[in-house]
Picture 1 (cartoon, rainbow, N blue to C red):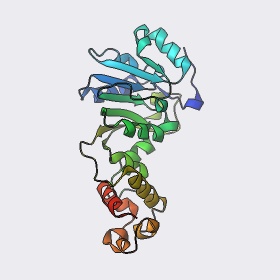
Picture 2: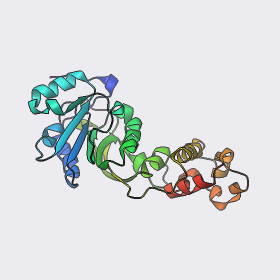
Picture 3: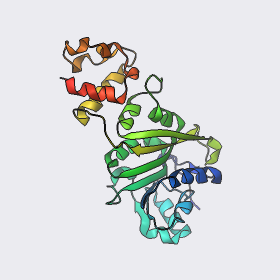
Length: 250
């Protein structure tokens, strides 16, 4: 068998019904190449390996889990990537899908890695800590709407699929979980540059209780700051609103 490593944020799925729900969500989409992130003990992997005509790869950092997967599923040996998903290049030259019970301690870096790959992605079905999933899927005006909501939704259409009880895992985490779906946007928001967009969003939400006029004062000329949109707080602006403002920043 294998051990669980707290340092890697390992909480492995044991509920077969939840595993099947996640896999079925992915089956609603068509793709030829698939990457599983953090297969761990193979709860999802055993179903994914059964799919015909799919070019499958799995990326796993933990050497012990690599050995366990090789012993349990001998055919997977050539499909395993022994590394952190944060350190690898896109594993396929063509478009690919991503599935995973993502390690909760690196949720944000994984999401930003997906942004790096968005031109190649067809769909992502991923499990996150419930709080993170809610923030990613939040809409303007919602208290959970923030930096991660805007930055991810600039590149993906997000759908909050379903929640998962902590007892579906070994060991049970101290938080609930949720599965979300990300589909790359066909048309990105019209922004001046990614750098300006990220700076504006992060600055605006850094003081989210203030009006935008006060929160981002240093990024715009006084004349621009007189526009009505700056009367709002950051949480009231849509992704496209933030993108539009990047064209009039200093």
